[in-house]
Amino acid sequence: MKAQRIKSFISHWLNKVDEHSIHSPYFFDFYKQVIKPAQKTKGDQALEKLRERLLLNNMPVQMEDLGAGSAVGGQKKSLADITQISVSPTKLSQLYLNILNYIDAKYVVELGTSIGLNTLYLSQKADCRIFTFEGNKSLINIALTHFESLDRKNVQLIEGNIDHTLSEFLQNTTKINFALIDANHRYEPTLRYFNMLVRRMNEKSILVIDDIHWSAEMEKAWNELHHHSLVYGSIDLYRCGILFFDPALNRQHFTLSL
Ligand SMILES: C[S@@+](CC[C@H](N)C(=O)[O-])C[C@H]1O[C@@H](n2cnc3c(N)ncnc32)[C@H](O)[C@@H]1O
Image 1 (cartoon, helix red, strand yellow):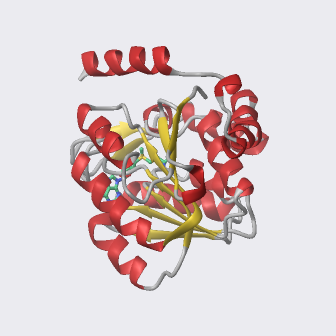
Image 2 (cartoon, rainbow, N blue to C red; image 1 turned 45 degrees about the vertical axis):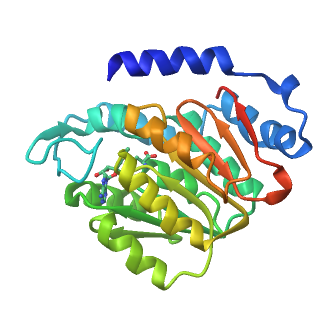
């Protein structure tokens, strides 16, 4: 596992280009408006204060075995460790919020809420409805406390195993502008969730997959998905992969850094 990550990190580093190599007007603009501002961000002051407090909180949290990356059931982890290891870092959360603003997203799906810090970032776009999915009961309670204390009325947490909750949710949903797949970091569920979500997306929608180089399985999923017949553009930022669905984008792929 470790050797694979080192190999993929080196490969990303060797292949990445800078803004001067982006000749497509759409991707150049996307880089300028979405990626570049996220590279320099300090994040939202109130949310970063919350992150600081969580990083000092050693309260034990019960883990549940829901999929790769969610730890072994029965095990406990400190809230500080969860914040450090499982929660999106500031730059990434800001990147996602920048995407929502860029495409003026109204309907957003986040698979994997954890403690809800990334969801709080997404919900800063107040005219947007965020549907976030989590199966771990202890994490659900922590996330709900955060949403309530910060009065986020545009967030709906869908509780339970995504393997069951996602299909039910999609039966009553007609469109999704942005989706983040950040739950069960395995090949099969990643492809399955993608195939379910993509049916509700349109050509202006964007789908992000987190941790695309985290394991050989995730790399395999990413390599297949960015060549998927419905995908017309992609950006590999190493930590995450961004997929675009507009046929006008001519199937371009970029390797960039965040
Ligand atoms: C990496 S964390 C999510 C981080 C969050 N999206 C962020 O950006 O900070 C992944 C979460 O997905 C949850 N999870 C994993 N597999 C799941 C499943 N099959 N159903 C429900 N939740 C799941 C885990 O409990 C964990 O809290």
